[in-house]
Image (cartoon, rainbow, N blue to C red; front, top):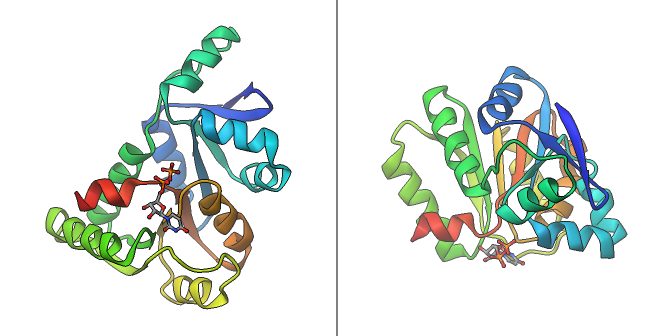
Length: 192
Ligand code: UDP
């Protein structure tokens, strides 16, 4: 899709449906999606390691009205806002309907377990490859090994910014497939 540069970050200009269609069409491929808000853009400007992490992604999409407004001011309007939480829920629904497995990495132990329980209630068919809380050192190999051995189709990473994108960028090369996405506080929202 078309790329729109907002303060040095190349955003993909595509709708949620096009994004879902693209990632689900590449069945054996890997996809790293960044849902970026103004905080992420600012972090990337101030932290080169973080900028390098997010530019390893396949898609950077506008999560939040701030980015949409910036794109309009730059006279290169992005077509729509794609909230990360909404995108995660749409992907989970897709996974549940298509026998794709999901791994939930992040948040406190309590929130992580509650979120998984709520998702099982809402999507009884959902295949949960595994789940783990998010309080570990970024270079902890046992976490990446656990995710890898379950071969998930979707990996939702709720470690907050910048850790979640750094974890994905550091580890994506050791996976053979999967859609990887940082989801911020979304597990807290699901857990209620
Ligand atoms: N979190 C985590 N490990 C950490 C820090 C944060 O798992 O080391 C979790 C936190 O419990 C929360 C999520 O990351 O569920 C998102 O945190 P926050 O709302 O601060 O991030 P944002 O949505 O602003 O990126």
